[in-house]
Length: 259
Image (tube, rainbow, N blue to C red; front, top):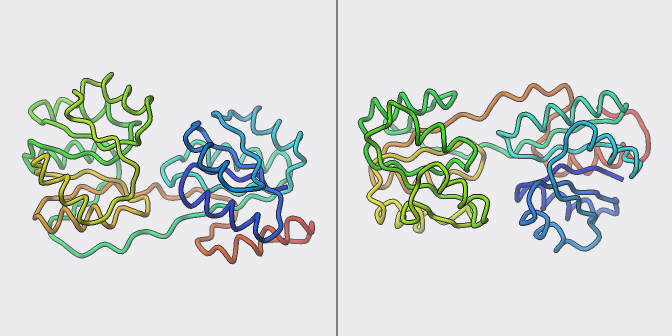
């Protein structure tokens, strides 16, 4: 059985591909929403909830896991490191799935930064006042409460989940500043959102499906602050081709030498 750490559309697609290829899959996901989406795939065993090292090790032992496929979000560096540690400790092969980066246009309005301090500094430099945030919820408090951004008004696009909306309210956003919407959306939809909220800057992450958001903002001459994805510190092989995932799974199930 393969342990698939999911949580993104890529993870669901990989689960379906592995099942179709005849493999047994235990998919771990953090949220009940993600779990419900995975449960739509016939044959997948779904584990819902956050995992620590002990919890992941229990899954590996109880389900006789033969390999760990890490298809978590590119910015979920903690769980990826945890998965590598458990794989190493338990002697299981580890494979990291990296979704390909979006092809983004060259533009003087596209600003790449390496971290969240860089986001605050760049927004301040741009003197933006109406900032559209498409960054998830984990860093909302940091951005909304940053002293450099005290004059900014924010709109946050988040998943349509109670916990996501609650986080927005907890950091001080009002209901009219929250867009609860499953993405990715079309270029036209994103353009309409930016126009409606009168955004004069977009902040998003280099996670893979950000191309339409970025293109829509640039259509409107809106500056884009793009947080570059963390550099994977992976001791295991990293792939972005689904055929390579299937090949790896065949090698794992056969207990043969793999990369």
